[in-house]
Image 1 (cartoon, rainbow, N blue to C red):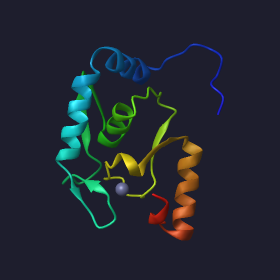
Image 2: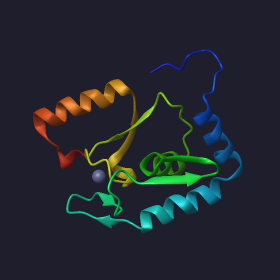
Image 3: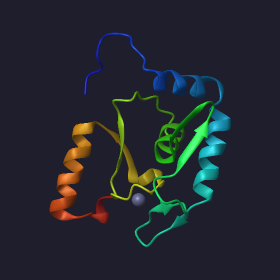
Image 4: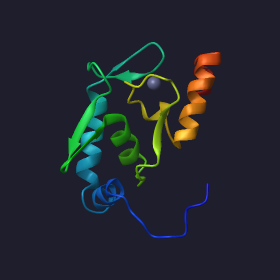
Length: 124
Ligand SMILES: [Zn+2]
């Protein structure tokens, strides 16, 4: 997808950019410790013992832990229009190999495919 040719950062992008430039080691340690606190399911999902998707608070902002893990480990700055897709359809999952950046439209399509076909774990 082409980037829009104007410079605009929403505040989640600004937050991530500051982390990538100034606090990446600390953020990476945090992401790895989140992963260290997970258990691995039969399908390879890595989940924490939380009721909903785990959250993480870092440098003044609270975000979904899966989003934090993927952005930090892939060192990718994304804005709020970018969603993190769970290819395993388990929103509790923090396994970076099950996560992928996408758009809202991708997310919807994932839901339809999941409703039709379930999860194909061979693709993960
Ligand atoms: Zn998973």
